[in-house]
Length: 323
Ligand SMILES: Cc1ncc(C[n+]2csc(CCOP(=O)(O)OP(=O)(O)O)c2C)c(N)n1
Image (cartoon, rainbow, N blue to C red; front, top):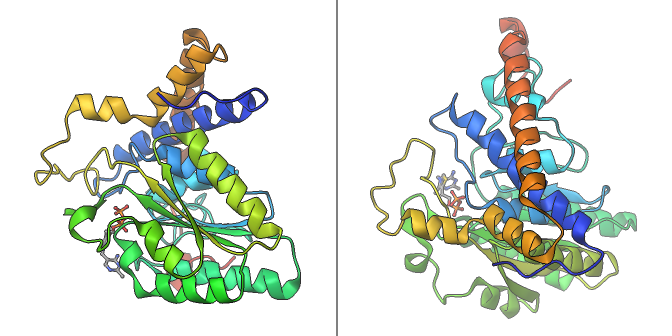
């Protein structure tokens, strides 16, 4: 069971719970139209906790897995995100690029520009450098997987972020797999926090299935970064409850039992903690689920009727995000 939210933060707990339920419903809808979607099933606490912790002006760069859930947390609508997946003109790229890895772009939110993993860590560091040069009070958060944590760019970024005390939070969404490669067979030295500490960066290991714990760790690190404390590294240890993509049967995994999955499930854990603490009851939980399902089915129905892009518009520009 998750740590019980303390008094005064029940509204945050409610938003985290609703965010995870909406995110899961959104991804369930995506699964009906794309077998190659890389779902964040089981990892919602990391995404929702981290992106809820951002202030409106902060910059967020989500890992590709769950990027649409991160976008949802930053105000994108389920309709535009689904349109982005299906490729309709109502999507963030107006049908020019499939939206699985990106969600919605804005001045403060950047999904992956391509399927290449790692560069967003460098972009985040650049964003934090820009904030420092501008004298602005903006922090940047970037999330990436355990596989991506072996990218050399992370270590260049940790180095410069530490030397220049940049306001950036590096968060590893450690779901313990990179496709079929278990993290324990790919990450030398065990805890990733030790790597960050070697660069003089404060580092925290957090239970990635506890949305409140992720939220608190990120909120604290972002606030400190805004006040000039420099970078912070967070490893949020979670669990990829499904395959690498939704049609991957995960034949290489032996421990994917329903018992393990339900014991770790971040939605169940937060809901149970809230029910035990008296800030939620079964009826309210059912209502949150009902509203999320209704929102997503309505969005999907609208997207089905949305127009496809004109061929000329799709090929007219190399920049999928150009207006
Ligand atoms: C630079 C780069 N190398 C390899 C790949 C191929 N690839 C796609 S997903 C993936 C696994 C990434 O693992 P992780 O960072 O742990 O993220 P997860 O898929 O577990 O969320 C790999 C290796 C890639 N997209 N980019």
